[in-house]
Image 1 (cartoon, helix red, strand yellow):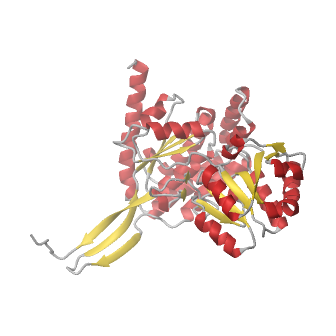
Image 2 (tube, helix red, strand yellow; image 1 turned 30 degrees about the horizontal axis):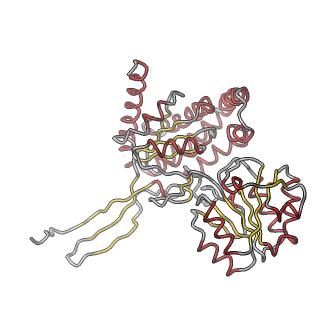
Image 3 (cartoon, one colour; image 1 turned 180 degrees about the horizontal axis):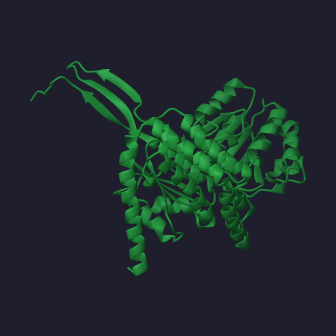
Length: 424
């Protein structure tokens, strides 16, 4: 081990132990104290908006010089509106009910024991993310309110922005009298720091990766700590034969083009053969008119010659860009089979006025989020009323879908007796 590697390992070790100590304090912190920290942090973000924007401008300029994609630039950019949204998000989390200490169940045993299941924090959460600096505010707020310490590791492209946002979060903690180590950032862009974080099972309880497929694959492969993750967002919007044509047009356009670089964006449109001529022209006009490249099967190409030919790889691609694939299906069963074969268990939607078809779709699709007559871009903790989200999980362990406050808690049992002993 070189001297630099030794120093980095020591720094990460110190970061983890400081987070563990802070988590012990946060687990017992009063709701009012946590809310005061969030409110003060929101005020600090507003007061420091120009400094945050200046740091972000440096990140954006450096990213452009490296030739980063348009979708990644959109994720990186902090406009005045997005900075205000971060501050408002902290205030919204402060207004949400405290998930810690909730009584989840309670019952009495025949021997007189009273047993209660109570929500408790997970402990220390490591969040590894790439180009979206606002994740620092969202994740920090959710961890704080749920009584968890957070270790934030942003990507090199957002390093300056994250450090500026973290300064505001730290100001909020100090104003409320909470340990500054409750929300920490990894103070280096060295990729080895990620590898070290993934092995810190003595101090870190959960890892949440937010980023591209490469990052999530690495975290899944190397982590010695449980992971909340989704690998891809290969999401589908299925236009059923009984869909309202105008609804199909408006919802599909939003699902693809509102923000193309987010994990909730639709990547494949499935359309019933019975609706091909009546519904698809309007959908294609809207998408292509908005600047979307459309790749389709032979039947979709026959409807509009602007549709480019799709190949087998398109059905398994998360574009994260203004590109969508279109496939014709013979009905609900074929749509379900396509989603099962090519989907990523993230978010899938059906547009239909047929209630029975909608229920069949909602029941059969094995995704974390299944939608009827609405955009897949509602796959977001804020839109679910969670205030914000730390990420989307497509796994089956503990949390699935948007991971918000409640999903950042575990539970313990409180057993109250009156002198009971267990018979030999």
